[in-house]
Length: 401
Image 1 (cartoon, rainbow, N blue to C red):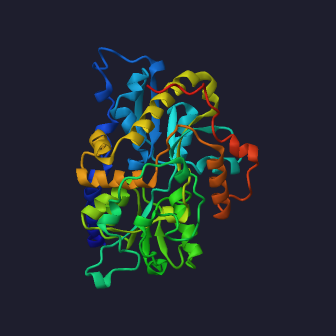
Image 2 (image 1 turned 135 degrees about the horizontal axis):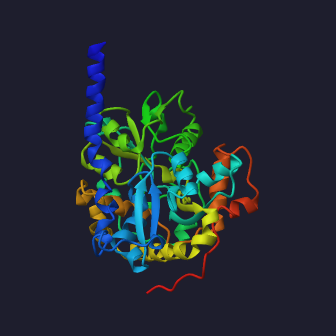
Image 3 (image 1 turned 45 degrees about the horizontal axis):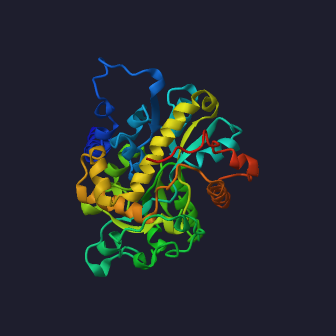
C-alpha cells in the first residue's frame, strides 16, 4: 500500500510540474501593476473607476481582453480592470450576483441553462468574446507517415495559411453540423478525421455542460459512437491540470484551445486531428456577462468598459498575428513566440473574434437551436426569453478615434 501511495504521489507531482507553465500563462498580463502610472499606495484608485472581471483560464480565445489591457484601452476610459480566476461556473455566477465580480467571462450556453433551471433574469450578456468554435481535438503523434492515424495529416502549410480577416459574410455562414470539411476554407481542406479512431480510447475533455464538451459528445453520437461507453471521456479535471495530465501520458486524445494546441504541437506531444469548428460553423461561444440588476446602477461604467473593449476588437481586426503576439506575449511568458503567433494566426483565420462589441439576436437563436438539437435543453425558450439573454445597448455606440 505504501508503494502505491508513493507512486500516486509521484504521478501527481509529475502532472503538476508539467502543468506549471500553464498555471501562470496569464500571470504577467493578469497583474494590475503595469497599468498603474503610480504605486497604488501613493494614488489609491477610487471605487467607481475599478471593475473586477472573473475568468476561468487563460486562452487565446480571450485575446480581446488581453489586448485591451496591454494597449491601455481601459486606462484611456479612466477604468482599472482587475482580473481574477474563479474555480467553477457556480462560483462565477454566485460571485457576480453577490458583487465579488462586476463582470464574468464564461460560455454563452450558461444563460440558457439558468433559464432552464428557473433562474432567468439574473445574468445578461454584455458583449461577445468569441463567435467561432476554437476548440480542437488533438491526437498523440504517430511514428512514421505510414502509421499516421486517419485525420492526422494536417501540414504546417495548412496551419499557417494566409491571413483572412473575419468578414460579416464569413461570420454569417450557415452551420453544417456533422459534415466534416464543409466549414473550412478550400486551402485548409484535408482528409476528414475518422472518428472510429476514438473507439475504445480515452479523450481528455472538459467539464460536463461546457460548450466544448457538448460539441464533442454530440459529434460522437452523430458518428455512431456512444460517449462514455464506446469512448471514455475524462471530464472532471480543473483547467489548470488538463495540459499537464495529457503531457504525463494520460489519454490518446485531448480537447484543447490555443495556445495549448500550438504548445503541444511544438513540444512534439500532440497533433491536431480535427477542429470542432467543422461540426458547428460560426457560433457564439463565450460572452462577458453582468448581473442584470447592476446595469441601471453601473451603466455608465459598463459603457466605458465597452468603449475600451470595442477599441481592442478594432485593433485586432487591423493587426497581423506577429504584432498581436508582441502585444500579448507578457500574458503568456512561458510560451515561445512561434507558438503564440501560430495560435493567433489560426484563430484570426477562423474569425474567432467579433468585429463589434454587440451580440446580435440571431447569434442567440442559433446557439439556442444547437443546444436543443444536442438535447441539452428540455424545451425551447420563448423567443422573448432568448432575446432578453443579451443586455440592450446602454448608450449609442461611442465614436472610434
